[in-house]
Amino acid sequence: MRSFRNAIKPYTTITDDIKNLSLSVSNISKELKPNGGSSLKDQVTDLHKSTKIILNRQRWILENREEPIFETDEHGNFKWVNEAFIRLTDKLFKDLENNNWINAICEKMRNEIDNEWKTAIRNKRNFEHQIIIVDSKNRAFSAKCIAIRQDDDKYIGKLVNVCEIPEDEKTC
Image (cartoon, rainbow, N blue to C red; front, top):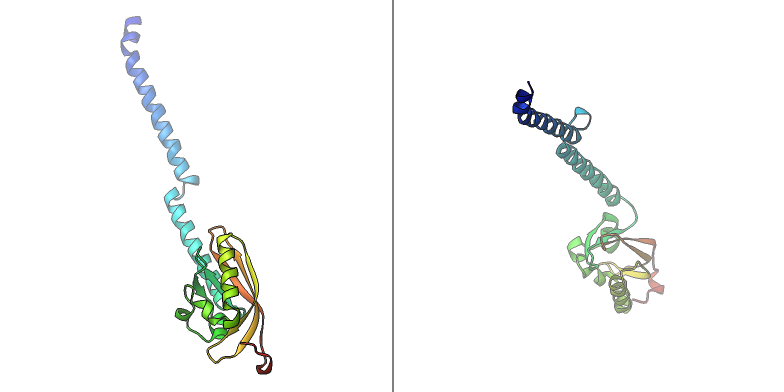
C-alpha cells in the first residue's frame, strides 16, 4: 500500500495544484465580474459613457449661461467661448479662436493685457484683470476677466460685471 501511495503521490499533487489553480482563476474571474455582473471592461465602458454624458450636460449649461465664458489650452489660446461671449464681442468664434481674442480688447490696453495674460500662463497662475472689450460695432464694454488655471494647465474663465461704457466716457 505504501508503494502505491508513493507511486500516485506525484499525480495527486498535480491534481491538487490544478484544483488550486482552477480556484485561483475562479477568484480572479469573480474580481473581474463583481457581484456576478458585468466585466471590469464593461464597467469602464459604462463609466466612460457616464462621463461623456456629464461633460455634455456641463457644456450645455456653460453654453447657455448669461455670463461670457471661455476655455483655453495650456498656452492660453482660446479653444471655446459660449454664446454670451460671442454676443458681447459681436464676433464669430473663428475671430476669437487661438490668440485672436486679443483683437477684441481696447487697442490702448491690448499690450498690457496681452503681457499680463502671457505672464500668468508662463507663471502658471490665475489671471484677473479689468478689461475693455470693443465689439464689431465699436461699442465698448468694461468687464473684469477672471481665468482660473485647471489641473491640466488649461484655463477656464469668465467676464463679470460687464457694462457698456457710454459714448462720452469711451477712451478706446
